[in-house]
Amino acid sequence: MRRAILLTVTAMLLGGVAGAQEAAAPSTEAPAVDPAAGLAAWQDVYAVFSHPRCANCHVEDDHPRWSGAHYGETRIHAFNVMRGADGSGFGNPGLRCTTCHFDSNSNVLHGPPGAPGWHLAPVEMVWFGKSSPEICAQIKDPGRNGGRTISEVAEHVRDDALVGWGWAPGPGREPAPRSAEETFAALERWNAAGAPCPAE
Ligand code: HEC
Ligand code: HEC
Image (cartoon, rainbow, N blue to C red):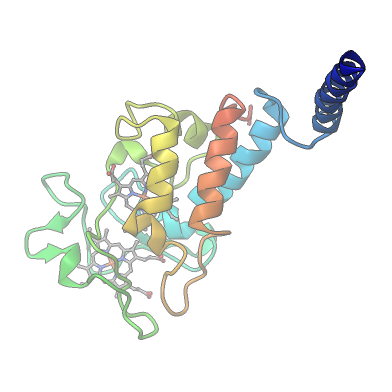
């Protein structure tokens, strides 16, 4: 009698495990490395990074850009604003970014936007005018991303004040697509899928 119960319990347990496996199999969760899912996740990341709200500060030369929603309308920042002779990105002495940009946005249309520590990204982190494969390769290169792992890049996107500004850019400016949290998640999905880059 006891033995029969034991067998029944064992069978139920085994059945339970098998059932769980069956239930897991058709789930939509991506396998450990899925290049197609990785490329789709990268597309979501690229849509954000290449958006003017982000790319206008990630330039190769000495000039921040300003623009409407599209590169076509983008111009070099007025007032002869420069990166700064010291390369810091905070501007030249006498015309620092913080002369006009404060810790929060001006509420006036065409007034200077603001976030704590407003300055240009270092030249090696250039996205402005770069293609998707170029930005992709550079984002996972610690020599060009501030010495970060991909997870650390994702955390920077989720937590940094200048990045966060891209989704709350003040009156008259189109925000970057989606949100900081969703871009963080897309970077994590891309990383989990082996961080593939598109061919073109
Ligand atoms: C006001 C200028 C400014 C804006 C706007 C800006 N960034 Fe940056 N970004 C910087 C600076 C400065 C750094 C360098 C900070 C560091 O390395 O600690 C940086 C670094 C980064 C990095 C880490 C380095 C790398 O290349 O991986 C990421 C990721 C990033 N920014 C994402 C974004 C995203 C996404 C947006 C838009 C939603 C954005 N940034 C908007 C100034 C800006
Ligand atoms: C003399 C004042 C002044 C200085 C100095 C200045 N800015 Fe600006 N900046 C502005 C104003 C005003 C705007 C808003 C323009 C508009 O919306 O029409 C602006 C807008 C921007 C934008 C938003 C562009 C967009 O379309 O999203 C960025 C990025 C920017 N500035 C970066 C910088 C950086 C980096 C520095 C320092 C190297 C700097 N600015 C120095 C006045 C200034």
